[in-house]
Image (cartoon, rainbow, N blue to C red; front, side, top):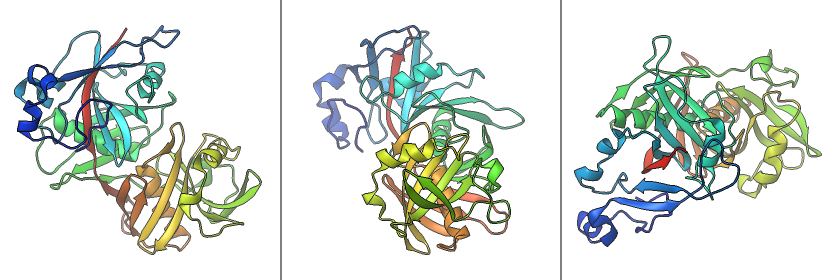
Length: 364
């Protein structure tokens, strides 16, 4: 497995013998990187040490550097974390089960997520005590410091993180309180995570969007002008707002690889028709069961994957008559399987979540 960090290690997973042959690893299973300070009062960028354990999924390590022993560390003044990714949508996972308040501030999260001066991530996720009878609570700070209601790829990473913290093996499910309501992830025998994402929200005022409803109370194939071009969009909330488009007046059948996402994405995100801003998905249809998308995420920008976005895309494709209720959705980071169940109206997402590395950073 590739190491998702600038560590002087092979990009392929070494065997136990090759791992033992690396001099720097025989006595210590840590490397030291120079990254940005996340101190609360830091006025300028400095370079404190970030110790990143090389105990990675796919690497054979001794008990001294086992993931379980690492996760049990509780030194004061340090933030211990595990870097996970779901199809390249990457997150810093923090064990926050002993408190209902996040261990770091949104400002610190921004610095941690910085890909040049920090760890690098699309967001920081906190595993917190459950409320209202749920097993756990999940909160997220985006890379810009904002707090989204939910994140589909994030909840899969959260589920794998909980399984590691609780030493769960095999098939398990648990309840998670999020800003979007109750989410139920289920760990599969093959290591994938299936998530009951609940029912899509289609009422325009609840998405929210100021676009006028044109299908009962919903916005389906409605026109919106962005940067002088008229786009056809369908608006869906999966607990967070999504604007899904399959084309515009110039190009009615998108070739998503040709889109200049960095140029058009922010103009959708901050459009006046979306009072809470919006995530935007640009979609190409291959067949009734195979879609391809690229996403501009609210608060994170272009990412390799977006789970709630893939769910919203299938819902929009069904509403527009472009696809069936069970689809493979290709994202830049890989495919997700999405089902919009006709019986209970729930959307189910199935996909992977993997460890990148373990690490710790001083809280100054």
